[in-house]
Amino acid sequence: EKEKTLAMIKPDGVAGNYSDVIKTAIFYSGFSITQEMLLELNEETVRSFYAEHATKSFFPSLVQYMSSGPVLIMVLEKVNAISDWRNLIGPTDANKAKVTHPNSIRAMCGLDLQRNCVHGSDSPQSAYREITFFFNKSSSGYVSRHD
Ligand code: CMP
Image 1 (cartoon, rainbow, N blue to C red):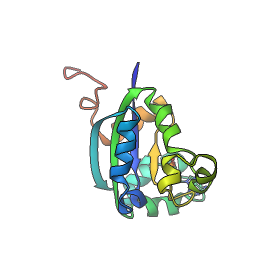
Image 2: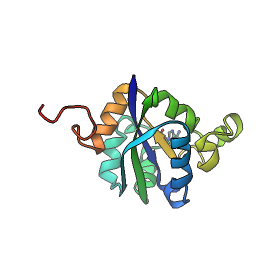
Image 3: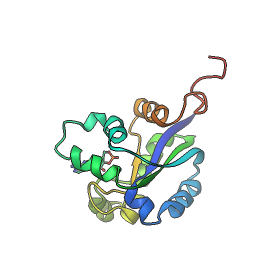
């Protein structure tokens, strides 16, 4: 069964010119990119997207970082897209990724625990929430044109 997930190249990844090499890795790994959008998130949008982290000590810094420049948002599709994309990007902490998952995307382009270059949805529920946060439901294939 095909599955969709939300992938994002974060400000450090876009600014570091990693978008093309990441997209090559995406296609090489068998994903299709069904939707794509480059945009600059404002602080309010970041707060809303990362609402589950609102009480964490790193939240103000995360909001600042994620609104510091353009991000590339993509919907990826393939069988097992959610877990396969998480495996391809590697652990959250880019410094750990460089040691334990040297072939991962975060090992290649992440800088540290916060500036980790890419995002991926962590469950079917968050994939649905995150995809419909940025793209409308009908163009994402979640509802038919007549619903
Ligand atoms: P992401 O997978 O997009 O989910 C939440 C983001 O918050 C995470 O990647 C990091 O960019 C950031 N993050 C998570 N944990 C920490 C932390 N302990 N300190 C700083 N930033 C963090």
